[in-house]
Image (cartoon, rainbow, N blue to C red; front, side, top):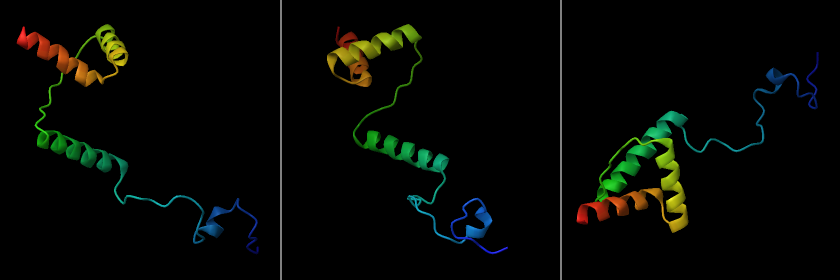
Length: 90
């Protein structure tokens, strides 16, 4: 059987042929990329003097915070910081 250049159903015949498409831009797998990016984000935050606080809230409170932040044209994180700042200073 001869190799027909227009036949794309037999992939094994074209294994060495370069295919069009975007080349890999990062040699690491996606899960390792995410870990590195998260580590870099935490280091940037620390360099900017920010500390991480994590809390769990109900879906209703989460939705209310999102709506209020959107209405105020600020991020949810900034809104929570403003609320906490008001409470601490009161």
